[in-house]
Length: 307
Image (tube, one colour):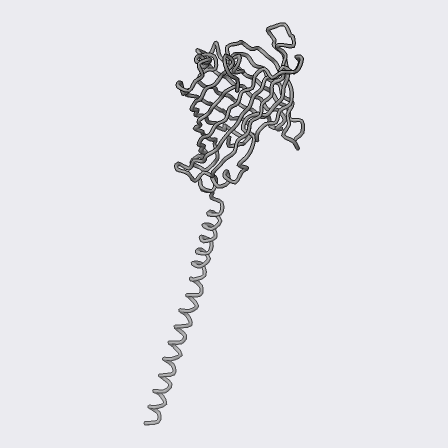
């Protein structure tokens, strides 16, 4: 009887152990079924967040990309064109060659206060009486400047344009009664409507105390600012520009219209046609009225240039 009782006790202990082990196996099986979905969800979420972070571009990323573009480049159109007046009898005195050289250099990246950068600019425009004997230069206008620039970036971190604040000087390098000179502060900007159309505007404030005595009324003919619209066709072959400079009112405005045809998509060279109607194109003869049509060659800046 005593051996029977011990045997029953041992069998009961073994049964309880087997029952407990079986219960643990069931729990483990349940865990292996419920845990993997949770881990997969976490992996998917982490993957999505990682890919989203790679796709998102911050304002700083856009500025860094713009800063990485060439610091030296074309500012305005560089051209050489020839033509004659449309309102006068054509002769060697009023038929000329007009050419312009214009470039800029960004001195810093956009890490200055308000995310600005410093740049310098230089534009030289000459009127050359090439058809006269000895081919003299009638007038040459020099326009250096230094200023601050800032990129315009939208809320969704797309580049929209730029604004600039500059101190500029313009003169013709002559003396005595032919001397023309003035210094001014200018504020300008450009805004892209899309990849084929942008708008540009500029206003200037003369430093009257530094203005040459021979051209104190310069702004009467040159105006206090201008605005322009540029349009490039979808195939990038034609580029049209309209530049308007109001004077006293829009009736007496100076107008420059141009059309350029890109010779080849491989090169940045254009056949160039310019129509000018107004005054102030030349500093020496800023009071004279011009109505001229000129044609020639032109090298343009990149359409998406920040300048």
